[in-house]
Length: 335
Image 1 (cartoon, rainbow, N blue to C red):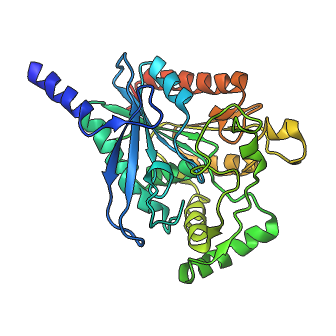
Image 2: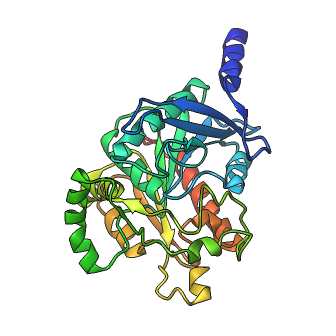
């Protein structure tokens, strides 16, 4: 028995160094197969809980983003839940000098680092893992759960404002299949991303927000995207438009409303400034399985960055939901 405990503790401490966030955060690099730009890595960040419930969260960030939400990790740790987060290849900590920032050609490429992170978590002695994804991260892990439905290394999913559809006009949406087709043959053509800079200004403490993060890795104005990226997103979104099954409990969270007037300060600070929440609802209803969809009044696009009162409700919703999964006898539960 002592040997088992010793080996587990060794696995929990191997290969990690102090993370840029400090405060008990650690990181390790995951080497990946070369992709169309050559060498690729992903960085896994963790903060372990003092009380161990045998449960972890693996968080996947969104587009023009990286993991910096220390409060989120603290909240899970307080509940005895270990917290892990991936900076996907070409984002944040994982961005290498020769790479195009935030770029991808197929969202399934990310499955490699997600599966490796899940394997590491299991190897470190944690038996249950909840996948949590924000925005593009939510789209990625939904596609992952659809395709890897019987993978034993994850047990539930939490989606925070998943990027299920481009928030564009009907005309642009009708043109997207053509744009995606062009992206197959000319992926390097660049176009404006169409994401408002107002959202970032109301997040960062140097402007009008309360959060501190690296503006090199999460700028207010996202770099121009290329058609290869548009094609990758469009292809994944198209796959989710028809009913599909997810065999793990799934919680979908989104703001109650989207911003309709970006000159209205109150709206920008209390609604989703990036996505149309009706699109999230529509796709979420296509998912067959144990699915719960919850709208959050006053929530921002990244719900855990909402004002203190609202994000407190978001965490309570998540923790109550996790407790309900623990309390069921279903074979897919966390208990």
